[in-house]
Length: 310
Image: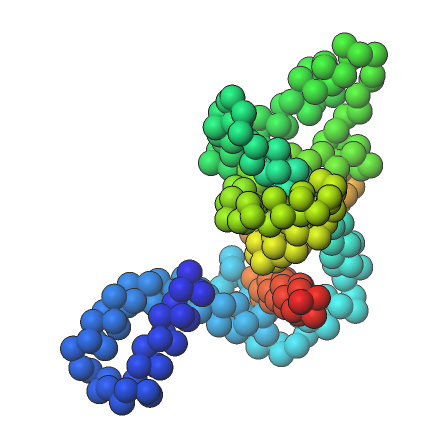
């Protein structure tokens, strides 16, 4: 939505500057009227809340007593120098993103390459792999929390058929993060698969045919032709997936509650915990600002890295 708003706004400004149109002329006014609902929603539900979060982050505000005191950067100082749990939360968030992002992208690409072929039932398989994307996140997490139980879970029952004693997936620190990552990957991989599939179908078959005539192997065709042409799509997918991995909340809340032993306590859930369980709105707002900055840095970093490669 942001990109659409900024593009439309930029086009209007270019028209005003280049053609010297009056700000309230008929054509320009029509443009403003068309984007006004989106601008209003963007202002009310993004810009104003973000500004408010920055303001709350420099206060000590207890939501129960409604007492608010300006404390400056005290919340940030406490987070970085006194709160040892914060660094555990950051580590968990980076582990979650570091596991989810490459798995999601790799699996989405493999599925897209497989389903880009013409065979009987290809539409059915595309639908099956995309179905989890439109499934409610809460329902998905609840179902998987039952499937991953120690004794009665469907996953361990299937493993028992081949003689494997499955772990207590969501109650053992060494397995809980892995279980949450995998269920999240399965949930969202279909969307990235569709994006890759659309990009693959936009590649001219002439490139592939020419490389085949030159004697290129399937791997060489993928490595030197298909993969470079997928670079813009990969950039979009990686940015969206990284942002989504850092703000994950529903899976953690419903499957593990940040446990066991804070093994899956990620930053988004930690913000919720400090705000609505400990009622420290100012402190939670400072954590939210840190999450915002971390997401922004990673997003810009990915963008600059791709630009450098090109």
